[in-house]
Amino acid sequence: MSGAMAAAAETAASDGLKKGIAEFYDESSGLWENIWGDHMHHGYYDKGVSADISDHRSAQIRMVEEALRFAGVNSDDSSEKPKKIVDVGCGIGGSSRYLAKKYGADCCGITLSPVQAQRAQALAVAEGLADKVSFQVADALNQPFADGEFDLIWSMESGEHMPDKTKFVSELARVAAPGATIIIVTWCHRDLSPDEVSLKPEEKNLLNKICSAYYLPDWCSAADYVKIAQSLNLQDVMTADWSENVAPFWPAVIKSALTWRGFTSLMQCGWKTIRGAFAMPRMIEGYNKNLIKFAIITCRKPE
Ligand code: SAH
Image (spheres, rainbow, N blue to C red):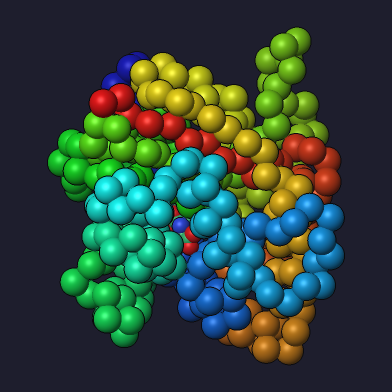
């Protein structure tokens, strides 16, 4: 294949992926909001806690707070509070509205799903935040923002959808102001050991099944993200594995899908959502096999 043909094939693949992501979230976000609320991400739990605990909403808020704490984003010192935040892969804007309220900051959210952008905006109006937060359909890999616009860059569980992780992190860095903090919380595969060049075939098989259900491209490890951040000269690069802290999440999601309300709502959704529901046990399998890692990666743009 010529270089031009290879590039065209890559663009077509990435357009197909974006369309799939947009349709998946257009279709499934209403169901998620009905059952789980406006945060479309894992909860953070104390290690070893049972999946039966009922306060998952607090666990999702705790996830946001733990991410801020890990990154050292200060909420006490008003001079260090973020003033302008970008929420990359914003869902229906749960984080954006939470952060805007917490810091009194302006927040811009982007998503590929028109239904999500509209719903996020409607919720902002309902919460009296219309002058603080705004949402639009835009690609994280080609953001509609000027260089250096934001002092907090927030990506909660969207990195796994990005087909080009280097481009993803470099866009986050581009829109970051000097000194801004970048927070990426994302699904990764386990780090490879020094004698490995790739995952095992059975591991790749399991991830491939998850990829088709959730519109994900190839996965990478937290170590890969660290390398990318370092190659872009980002500073204070830190990472942690929070897999054990999110362990109760998927069992709880499955349990909610098996309630009468969850089940009947699911059956009213399209096949993309139903297929996603059937892939949920594979996420648990991936965590149990130490293949899937729930990772946070944070860094800072140099001053
Ligand atoms: N951060 C949100 C939503 C997580 S779901 C929350 O925690 O509630 C993943 C989100 O990533 C969806 O909103 C999806 O539209 C978005 N996304 C995936 N790929 C994207 C891309 N290339 N550009 C912008 N958003 C993207």
